[in-house]
Image (cartoon, rainbow, N blue to C red):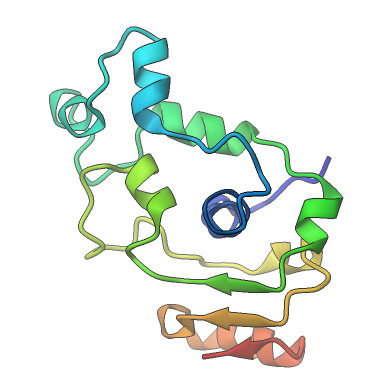
Length: 142
């Protein structure tokens, strides 16, 4: 299985595969994981009660970091969307408003894992040096 170097980039890929395409299953729900572990079933309350507001809940981080994605699924990704309202962000950090750099992608080393990626929308969230990397690879950024 393939491993990612940037969890934030991996999260955007998971968003595409799990919540948009529904090819990476089962869909993760933080509420289900918390309930399964006997930690309640309200992610928002859990985050506040454990001083995790505006942070990634460790249980979600662990899940997504360990999640394996097959090469076949990675090859199916042709487009990614960057947006502060992605569902995966709510599942990772239920108390987050998108006003900080918690989910910023800072490197694009993992582009090689997506051989058919052709477009990234919402690219205004990327630094200029990262936009240059996309251009070099022929990936449309808008």
